[in-house]
Image (cartoon, one colour):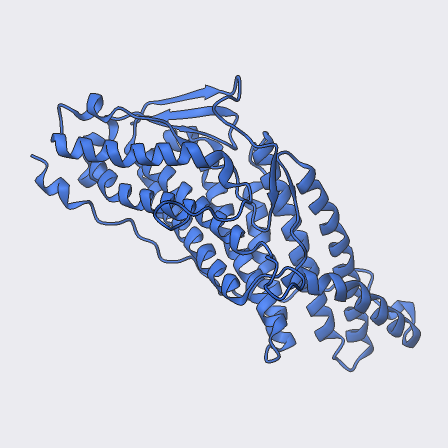
Length: 411
């Protein structure tokens, strides 16, 4: 059950898409924005005035905040202080968390109330301008999606290099790196909960009718890329650590490849045709190539530690693959930034700053040395397979909150 109405994109006036979203360390697909709902008309005869008013007040707060900030949240302005002293993103996140326990009363114990209200959200990646569905589980799904996107936005702000007090090159602090991993895991947790616990509540027919923003494959891809970027931060921290071995760095780099490969598998066959969706696909392609460059680089260094002609030949092939993927990632990065809405890279830092210096230099050096020592026949034409490691980074274990106590006093 659940009536669905999709409005085709005709004017674009609701979906205010910025022409330029500024610096991007973490790509956040366009945020879905809720439109006003009249709870009193739908539920006035079924529920107490208190619950109806609470639902209305909590959701109206979200509509107002998201409507004001949604079109600009993905732009990389520095964090705005609010009258409460927090950030705009944190305030909107809190508003969603306050709303969810009250909203869940509509679906408690399979209540028929879940079908009473038509919830309307403006889409970003889907060609339909907005989607209206009379099912409260659709609202829960939309809320979790927005919570995840806000967490990714928080991570992006943390990972934009800032000019240090000593006036040296802009950098990302260790504190910001660690905090960003927390946001990545939170985002992944919201999305994992959406896939495992909310989507199954919707009928197969209704799931097929969801906007592509909420398609299972998109939710899975976003979850995987959040984990992939979390591993990227871990790898950068390992690079900076004198205690981290080559084996540790290779493992992290290879795990990152698997996250991005799975993200690409999920997102590449979807009809993401408009600006936000295409840019999303370009971002995943770029990061996948970047991850492979790092993995082949560290794999090549470990192979080069072997004492046989074969291992040295494999090392050269791996390093050459790293160099090719690095060049490919730079081209894909340019395509991503040039795709609307326009974006740009912050100054290089972390994993890619290190690898952008080391991959070309070490590849050239190792290839020259090994070609001087061995015949061309001893050097592989194709790169050796990367080691297959189990994925260690997992989403936060997020569970839907208990239904608000007001529902026990609803009559």
